[in-house]
Image (cartoon, rainbow, N blue to C red; front, side):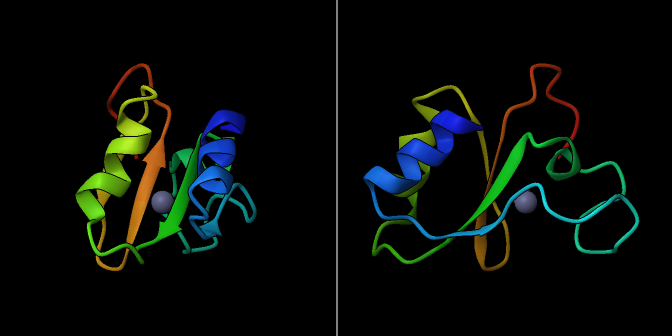
Length: 81
Ligand SMILES: [Zn+2]
């Protein structure tokens, strides 16, 4: 997720969650990609969240819009969050 972190710095996106914590701490799903260091959450703060998401999608990441944040992950299998 180093490249996603770099994109976040470039666009001044605020990373609210990374790989901290452990499976079972109830912050993310038990099998979340966060715990494998393969996902970050970003604060939605731009007027245009679609454009914000596109920055990461263009780089090959999976982007999901959650309630109040963007979940950006790298999952070649495409089956986990
Ligand atoms: Zn997430």
